[in-house]
Image (cartoon, rainbow, N blue to C red; front, side, top):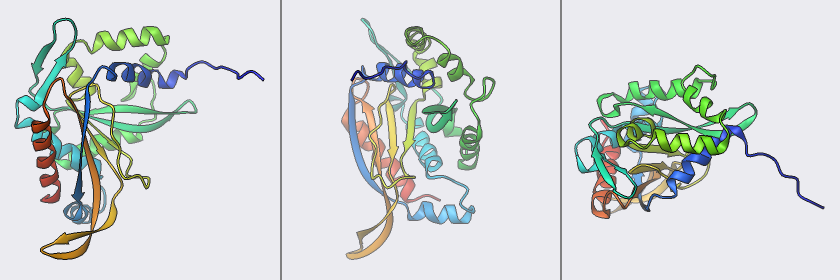
Length: 249
């Protein structure tokens, strides 16, 4: 019996183009555990309106903004070039259903280092509520989905050729979360310099001041492009983000 073939879903063409681009990135992954006690208290004070993704976006944006080397974006090719961007844009991934097809779409939180966490949450909420209409927040993605796959790939590559445009559209860094499921960690694919992954929060025994206590803990991963930055800087950045999240105020 032959296996029937079907066309690649139009709703996932942007993901296909992104992954073809991301394959050129030299991924290296780092992991750390984050005590979310301070975040949980702040969420309770805000009525639970703030997502953990927003805290990571804000903390990571501030950490990246203070280091020019961390704001470096690569333009690859026969003559690789580097650009240092001023604003730190965050790319956030959203699980959407478009015309009956489940897919992942990305939205941007522009200049995230200059926004407070409530403002960041507002941008994320707007993307969550958007129904992926031709004139909504995901309008550019909808236009890309209508193109034949080879043309979509060519257009994707051409638009992101400029590193500053890449940083604005694809994010200086990205954040993706699997915290809604009992999944400990995700190691994201990236087409930029940085990508953070958020796992589910679990009550976990930890040692504090010589005693075993239970704390809400999640695994935070950092994927970085080794062509652009080295492991020492990446480890410092992840440690700074961990500290900021655990000492949130």
